[in-house]
Image 1: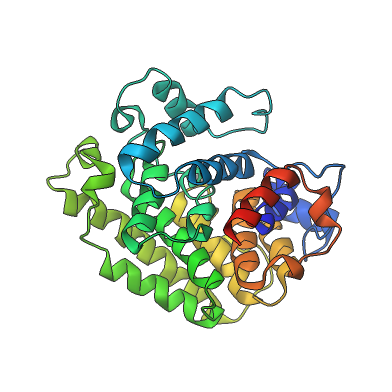
Image 2: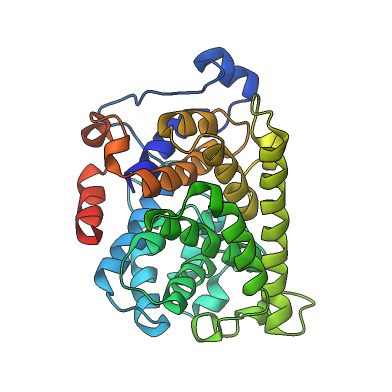
Length: 323
């Protein structure tokens, strides 16, 4: 969780900058120091905290118990005075519809696969004690409540499992293949107990299996770009040119994985590379930071950052509960 927040804070000032301007200001390695007391984060960390705190509240989640808590947490974020960090319009529109009290499957922005679906899913990978079905279902539900596109669901599940596997000791060198295998294994599995009739919101989709397969196929293609980029071995320059700008879910996952897997034992380097990107820099860096933090633990980061980062008390609460 701290890795996510650190990446978010480092990517915050570079999100809307062109790559040459980032390099001119920070050098080719990107930003490597937190600034501010506290160092401010964006809606990425704010919404990840909302998901994490919902999971503290609902210890053995199913859709019926978790959905109203997620709704309440998302609305608290949406109407908070601290929601002033250029939040995504998909999340704001969906929260506006959720506030009306109808079914979440009607409130969601069904055509959106923006990265807001998976920038906040890290807690689902970290929380202990979930079954495989629960972890996948929670990851997809929290995504689907705002971003109803199947690729947002699949990318969120993959992000959660990347965090979960790295936290459990999976070697970074084995991560990409494990994620690619999950795309194949889950391709036709529609989690109706978590998603209800969401699939019917997608135009020209004749079955739940066809709906979810599209998401897994698009994620698989994005993971293949990561593999090709790593194999090429040319890591200088803008990472978004290799794996995409990150504004959409599968590209955010792919670009974060690419930045992380180049140097998985150098977490600050990972964050600098991810923040020095021409696309959605804060989301790419927050996911890359989540991967690095899950694998290496809190001790891998500069010690002073823990008290400098915004929302440190809430991050500590989640980490203490789950460790």
